[in-house]
View 1: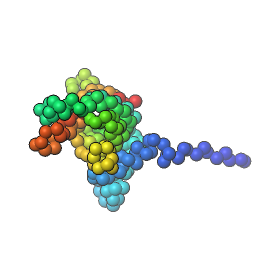
View 2: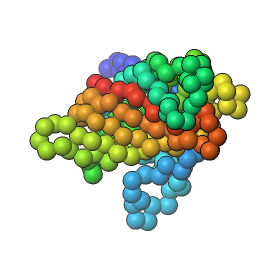
View 3: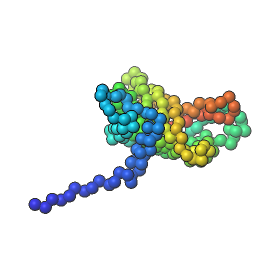
View 4: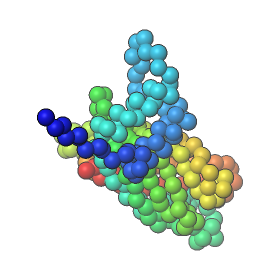
Length: 204
């Protein structure tokens, strides 16, 4: 009997999804994003646990599109002259996976590119965790948490990616949310930090 070989799946290392997952795994490990829980007697390293946890989010989570549009700079932090120079239309697009875990909270892996305050591309890839709070029985829910990412910008470290943790919040339904990430003011000096990024996440 002639055995017909099964078609080989396309090599994952050549797909956008695989590259995105590799980037988010690196980000999670760099920032010590550990799994939600450690099984008793588990001898795997933190790195292996992190990879396994991220792989589960990627494999079991729902695909999501990210759309960006607003980067609001604090009016009391920036001078009028500086505000006139800065871009607040942070148009951008991203893709990721979001998993509603056993605790009813959202864990996400994502990759994102948008136009930064100086109109240059800003690249981000990372992990996000949000505690989810339903609003009565309306279907609406609030999310509060944080994100740990690797970011690349032309005006920092010659575009070499660097780690960034940011607070995160959202409001909407499970399938569609308006999200907020905040960059705090970095010093007492004017014209730094204090930026609210507003974007949307649509699960598919």
